[in-house]
Image (spheres, helix red, strand yellow):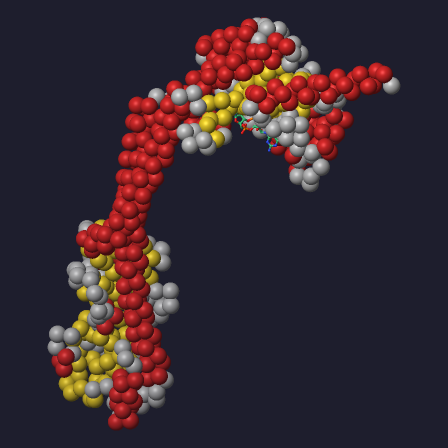
Length: 534
Ligand code: C2E
Ligand code: CA
Ligand code: CA
């Protein structure tokens, strides 16, 4: 990727990481606010229902007692005493009284002379009881009472008691009603009686209407009560604001931290790619060579060139650190070109002298598209003798995602005498179809599978399948990362031709490698001579 594009991408990502958490915070605040407000309104409605239920239950219990009395003289002193006691014992009740027609003759307050006219029932309950909703007694003018009548007895409660909650919210409205009967039993504020209809056959509903969040609930204890609570939507906004004030700073902080992180990582990336450019100019890259060994003869038949970077301060940077950055920033082609130049310089003499020696170099995906990389491999091959298969290019499965393209390039490399290996086999997305459609010379078994030999790891059988597959396809195999004699013996017995690994030799600088190669070859020829003599 070009530098300016990286910069643009960085800015976009940084903006997203900065704004994202704030948007998320506002969204969360809204959801939290609404959820909390819903819960609160529902809580009010439930409280009203609870109180209504208590009042109804107390009225029913009182009526149970008084309707069981001998009604010879319902207004006797003893009975009125009982009425008084009932009134005192029940927090929701004003009292009980004796009624004929619509007239209350006596009650908790004594004998009424003249009798008090209660008026007609407002609601007839299924049980046969009757309910009067807005009874006003002369001794408490302006206070509306509810009277539940069974037979000749009525229990009286304060009508507004159920909705008389202390709600700490401006504009909150409450009401109680009798499901199945029109109108409200009592209300605090201008509750819309039509809201009752929204309940239908549900136990409770929640909705927003006329600028209010409304909860309507039905009692699950006493079927005769229901309640409405409503709070203005504006209180929701206030709640959301509270959450925003809490969450946005957190979002902002997260945003800032994430942005800093993105900028830091981007800078890091930029720094490495800039440093690679400078290192190329200053010739800080060099190659080390790791021997590839014939498993039967122990002869060094070749080497893999591995890139190293020596920094100003003498420290060595390994390829796993800089190759991925170079691949992302488009610098890899320049690096590969440098590898090919370095290899030509390091190995020219050695390869002229050892015509059977094969040198491997690693390619990245972009190299397959780069005319210059392909040209330089050719140059390298010509420089070291131009013998068929003396130079080998290693490519990984990941590079072969468009097999048609890859196949054409692999073919043309091979036609020009360059051998091609599939590297790190088994670690990518490879499928058999790659191997069938693209003609390779060598398959490199990844060290992951070599490590698994003689272990309990689930992959310890994979190496056998890979070897079989290679044989079927007529590919030679090189096992990577061979560290123990057991691994070497196992691989040799299974027919793997070559190996590479610390058991045979670590990657070495060119001078050391040349010496070691000579030592290996003379040792072997000495053994040969001995064998021939004896
Ligand atoms: P790779 O191609 O799989 O290279 C083999 C890696 O395994 C090398 O690591 C080598 O030092 C290491 N190795 C060899 N024998 C053993 C062993 O017995 N045990 C263990 N544990 N490791 C062993 P290195 O040199 O760090 O290279 C790492 C990767 O970097 C290479 O993996 C290759 O993918 C990439 N790379 C190295 N040089 C170049 C280059 O010039 N161009 C490109 N494109 N990639 C390169
Ligand atoms: Ca390799
Ligand atoms: Ca490899």
